[in-house]
Length: 271
Image 1: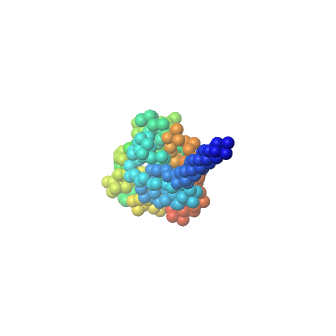
Image 2 (image 1 turned 45 degrees about the vertical axis):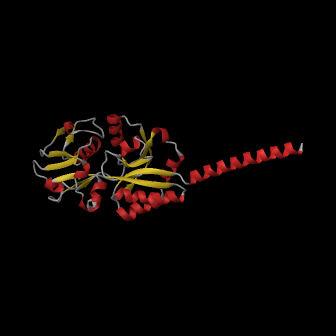
Image 3 (image 1 turned 180 degrees about the horizontal axis):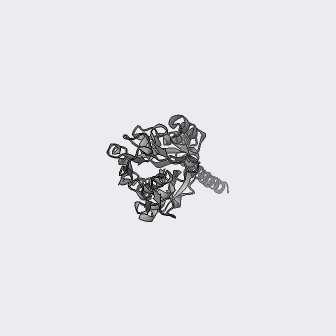
């Protein structure tokens, strides 16, 4: 009887030890969890570095993967090379989903970067002459965004009902016969000398040495701007706890304070 009792106790102790080891492994795995986050290089990477530090304090390791082309981060996320990305607004994601069928969803707002019109040749939009050339992004969402900026400042008039994503074909009136030239968004800062003016996404503008508050001739509104950027994830992962921690880290006081001191209104919190 004593032998059977000893054997049972040994088995129970072994089972308990295994359970404890498994629990410890699970705790260690959770504490050491890493997420791969895709961001644009430059200003947005700086912001992500602050969020990365905040996340580390919450037990989450964030590995930043940087890009220079808007076309790549969603493809990388869809392929499983990233856990999330943080670079885009809703109209851009909607256009990408329509074109490529991605099952990607927004999970938390990060920043908003009011788009602006820049020039090396003129000092105000009033200096635009008939036939002036204006560069705009060639992707549908940011191109539409640029057209809305021109329309809101009376430089063109768009056909009604086109919302956030009009195209050049939707221009109903162009009183100065402006020549709108579509170019890849990342190329516009380098091509600025070739145009009378160009509408440039703020991250590319800042990365090229432009100061939006000083250099932009016109800008989108700061309040109520519908182009807030967000963290995006695959639909199947949208409720993953680690990604919630990532969102919380971006939507932190540390990031808000960094935006205020580093960018002085050029890049704003969107949450």
